[in-house]
Length: 132
Image 1 (spheres, helix red, strand yellow):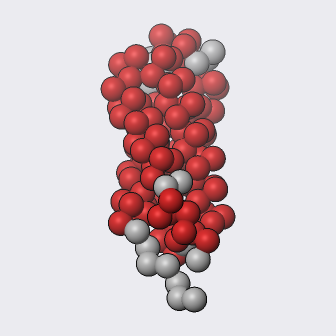
Image 2 (cartoon, rainbow, N blue to C red):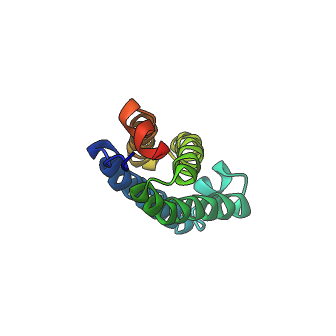
């Protein structure tokens, strides 16, 4: 039996995953620049909470970008890792949108991309590709 050809949806997911990871990195980085804004720091329980949240967002984004390469190769481990990370990204985006309303539009956009990524990773054609 030959190898299943990668569906276009999986390629799209890889691109969307990269974008989602990049948005998490950008959001976390922008949040780091808000440490001197008292109201923003207070929304995160102080500067240390804000810094921790920003660093977690940046790390999630970096992991998503690194693991996204495995999607193109049909790695089932990459698919599960990306699914878990995208769920965490959705949770973080919702939290950041509530805690920092000025950046809410970007966070909602990031969450929407994460939902699309998860949906496309688990279609029938994607399942066949990841099973090999």
